Image (cartoon, rainbow, N blue to C red; front, top):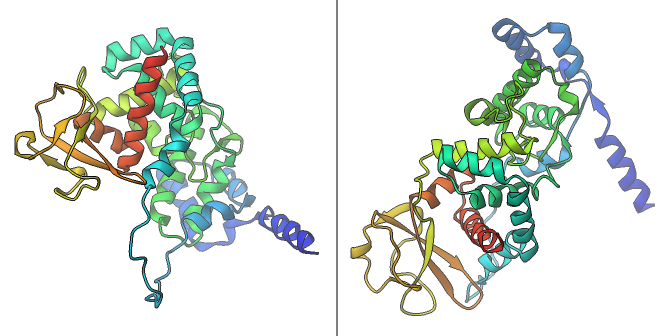
Length: 329
C-alpha cells in the first residue's frame, strides 16, 4: 500500500499544469510579446503544458523561522566538514579523467590558455566538478524547472524569472526547442553548468558555428576561461598554498575569501613547502578537518574561482583537483 501511495504522488507530480491561468504568468507573456517580440500563441502553448518540478522547488522553498531549541548544545563541535566535502569532489578517478579530457582537447585548451591566460587544469577541474566532464549535465527539463521556480512561491522568484526570460530568448535566437533542453535542478546548462544569463555575458562561440553551445566542449572550455578572465584572473599567478601555524585549531585571525591581509603582518604563519612567489594581499582559508584545521594562503585567482561558485570549499576543491590533474598530464 505504501509503495502505491508513493507512485500515486509521483504520478501527480509529473502531471502537466496550465500556467497560463496564473495572472503573473500572463503578465510575463505580455511582457515577452511587447518588449521582446515573442509570438503570443507560441508562449501560450509553452506555458499551458508545464510539468511542475517539485524537487527544485523544495530546495528553494522559503525558509521557515525555527523556534528556539530547548535541547542542550554539544559541548564540543563536530569537526570534519572539509573531509566530508572534498571526498566527493576530488578523487583519483576524477583527476585521471580530467587529464584524459585535457589531452583529448589539447589543441583547444592550448588556444584558450594563450587567449585568456587560464591554465587548462583549472578549466578542466571546474568541468569535472560541475558535470563529470560532460557525463552528468543534469536531467531536469530546463523550461519546466525555470517556470516552476519563477512562478511558484520560493525565496528566489525574481532571480528565476529573469533566468527564464534569458532562457527563452536564447532558445528563440538559436532556433532550439526549449522543451528539449536538460539541465540541473536550478536550470544550469552544459559542461560548466552556466545559468542562461551567463550565456549572454560570458558565452563564447569558439568553434565558429554561429551559436554558443555550452554542451559542446570547445565552447564550454572557452566560455569558462573567459568567465574567469572577465572576473579578474591573473595570468601566471598562483592560486593557493598551504601554510603552518601554531596549534591544531586556528582562531588567531578571521578567515574567508572576502578578507585580505598583508602577509608581513600575519604573525607565525608561513608557507609549509618553501617560498611562495606571491607578494600581493592574501586571504586565509581554513579547512575544518576531523582532528585539526588546515590553513592556506589564497591569492586573487582563488577569489576569482569563488565568483563561479561563492564558496571557499568549492574554490579549494577546484584548486586541489587542478593540481592533481596537472600531475596526471
